[in-house]
Image 1 (cartoon, rainbow, N blue to C red):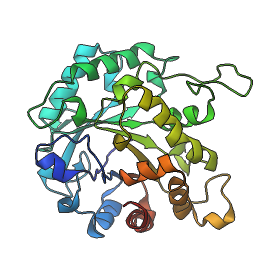
Image 2: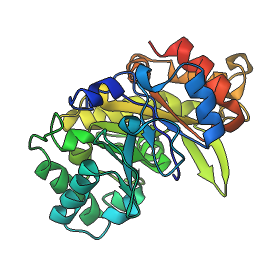
Image 3: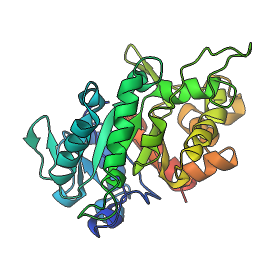
Image 4: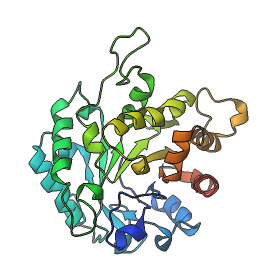
Length: 299
């Protein structure tokens, strides 16, 4: 994920309180046109908007947050990761450039399969150790860890949704066909926000999660986070544009954008995640449709 704009719990952040209690947070990750359309449509800074560089400064500095690439965490020690995250919380820098943020929040873009137990057990363990180091009180409110938000790549949720068993890694034959995420999950449980990217992006083409992935993804991820002491209030969905209905959804579900919101609004866990606030990734010309659904379904 690149050049983003984030709408979030601005009131909490500006008051110096932890951003972990992120009910109603909405993250916009798009070009300026769609972002401005959504902001002008009602999700403005005073109503809870936070703006993430390096996209242009649509909102003032107190509504901006910092960002760091997940790749920058790979290969670092826990102490180095903790130090890097702290530096981005203190001062909003993107690729060494000061973007004059004053929210003291950082978004990690993104946590990929490189952090699972199969591909990167050391990466996952080091991130968790770093987050534990950041459990101390920060001068900006809450713990340092609560001021860290993590974007979770689609493979994280989709693999967990497909897997069976206690760790959601087993196939229908009872054998472990999917990777586990046990080393990184305790770290996620300490973050101020965990953002599940509920779409697939392949070769530049974005498609929404299938009906089955929507049915299982949120609740299955929550079942794993809950065991690690996570809070459901910190879990969020990220949606993108949807040119067609999600695979497996009936025609009665409606068009692509409306249908994925309807699927997100199905089931008690999904409903609670939805009420935490929903993010938008490259919704483009569907910005108005996204906003309409947001107003209708996020309480």
